[in-house]
Image (cartoon, rainbow, N blue to C red; front, side, top):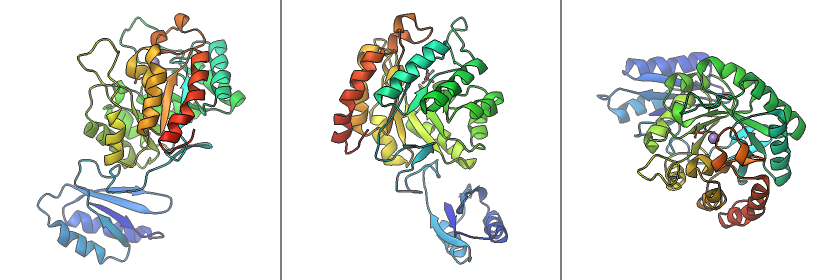
Length: 340
Ligand code: PEP
Ligand code: MN
């Protein structure tokens, strides 16, 4: 169960609730928010929950008690019925406007990044993507520019005003990446890297958690729960395709996951049609489909010269293709009751 404490509860009152829970045999997981504290109480299988709740309700500091029977609590819809909005600078993710994040798979050079950043900004994107630290299936492929890449992303933000999203791959890099980025991306290969999840739970920057390529939705939500449990409530999910038996597309983009998340959670959902299909020819149509189905945003790989891209050229769309997509998308957003 989740115990929601009254605004302005004193530290002594919070402690009192925590020790009552512990006496009842519960494990206690508090989130000390700016406005109020909430406490997740789990792991007392023998306890009479209703009786425990009655006893807790009698405490002065307790405002409400919510029962969540799922293996994730804070990210569950039962905990919070209205959708969460994640804020990165002036960009709101999860509000009425569909957010478009765009840029190269990987930061390759100053010229490549700035050219792409200027173009996607002019077309209406509000967030710039670009990997500085790249997870690679092959140890022989380009691993990213590292710190130099982060600096270029910061320079592009300075010039264009775009917010920056980039991947954090190692616990040891979290602080550094958070210094340069506005949103931290956790890649598909790290969705269940619990050390990273716990560490990004301690910072106060938005995090985009990609779905593991073989992860069930429930596992994905539990991974998000790790971050929120740490007190970082600024979490969004990203569907990026799952591995199936089909090799024609790089992954199978599971657009029903957007609906599943909407049914189960209050967290915003982004769709990545680039990793999701692996084919630039499919990216525009799958972007439109994602918006039509209710995604809160898109993350799209755009490259000034996909044929020369060091990574993911086959799934990167050109600047003209991105421009056309941005002309076409508002109708799909409108059909879903949103704007761009
Ligand atoms: C990427 O966004 O370029 C990327 C590596 O994503 P994923 O973790 O989904 O493969
Ligand atoms: Mn990529």
